[in-house]
Image (cartoon, rainbow, N blue to C red; front, top):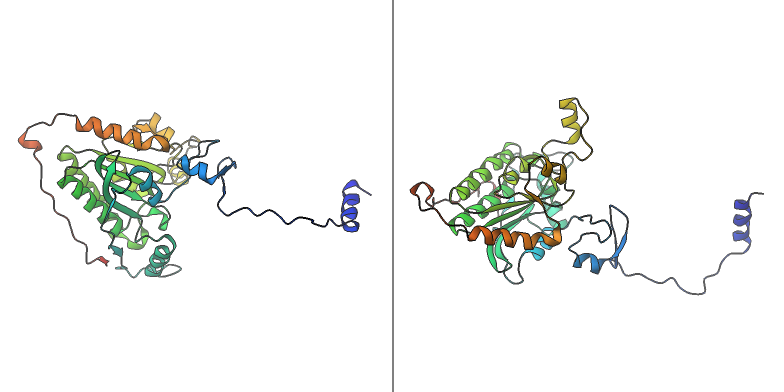
Length: 310
């Protein structure tokens, strides 16, 4: 008889009787890092802005958490929260697009994949857009593009610095060409913002891919990124098959893009608010050029009521 069988027979003949009930652990008391597996008190993890205390892995957070981290208390004003997507193409895959939208609205409590508004960051007024990957992978449809465009135009008209926190899988295929048009629309609005010599800083988080990377995510005056974030346009496999060569292991990471000049800085999440405040203050101290060619240009919001409903 093997030692394993001996222990198995002994357990059967001498069952263990519990003298004390199992101690209950409250749900959410501990959090396990998806990168290193370390267990951390959720309270300590939140105090470190959802960055693992052991390996510094940046855990994905919601748009509400991001706004709470960046915006001073009681200064946030939400914009254009009444816009919701309709289904102009009557698209259907495994389920109808309108049903899928309703499902994600119920699951996340959001109207679409971005929240926009104005508030104060360390006492500095700014316009802020925050994408939420929970809502259809942060995909950019007509509502996301319209909300960001209105935010950019509001920042231009009120001469506010602009920050957009990006987290997206790219364009929303269920809206076809209407989704791809948002790339040009947001880029055109940002060009007016730049023409008025105003600051725009995109913050690239994990992941930032597809049409978002190909438009407003890469048009900043200073492009910041979180550590080890996936940033790119096409997927790794598609690029390898196109180039017919093996890519480096760190391809399409923040570190790789920084070393090749695609982004300006990698900023850990606990330092992001301080870094943004410093950059906004430096830009505010820059002298303005009094030149007719750089005069402020009025911009007008492009309504899309035909694509959205309240």
